[in-house]
Image (cartoon, rainbow, N blue to C red; front, side, top):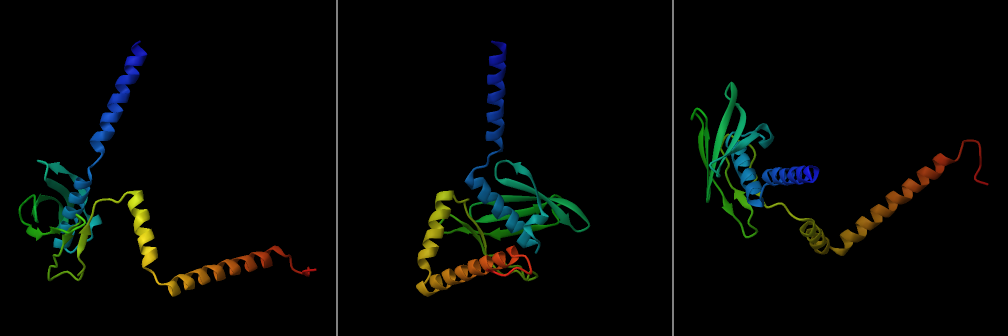
Length: 177
């Protein structure tokens, strides 16, 4: 009886731990927006910042190199705006964003010192079904000549692979008879 109780207890603890680590789609989008805004504000790559955690539910904490040392950055996400403040309050920025019709967060923030001039898009992760539907829609958007050209290129590559394999299989000095 004790073994069964212990097994049930371990199972419950494991399920609780995995549920605690799972993030919602909104949290994933919020993390994307805050990290991207922080990176854009400093003209750096988002991979330069390590996720530390969340404070008070809407303040995302990242750590990155700033000045001559590593610094914590606090990114508060409010509707339409991301406030970024460093731990010592020497770095402060406000970055505007908006949600489009697909519920993607869009950042149109281009500091004068940055060369990167594309908009930042943070969307909910897509399911396998949505990815398949997107591929199918993309297929039907293409023109027939483009599809035919792609099929022809694939057939030529396959033919080249077959002929190269068959010529490699014959030892030198033997004829094809």
